[in-house]
Length: 90
Picture (cartoon, rainbow, N blue to C red):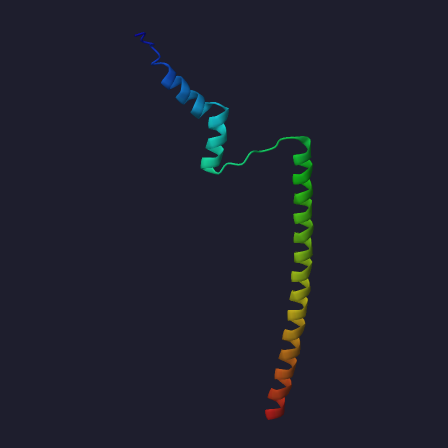
């Protein structure tokens, strides 16, 4: 019987599994990491997404400013009516 001294196969297979291409893919799956595409298209897409978000923020700021103006107007109206009713009871 021929004895093959292949004790080194087990560590080699473990290294290939954990540090090789198969292991990289599995680590990403296990830890929930996503693959980052660093191509020129991804930078452009991110830039467009940031611009869209900034436009949305600008729209929301304008809406908040309009609501503040309306609230101030409503407070002045209520204050005027309250003053009128207090004068009527005096």
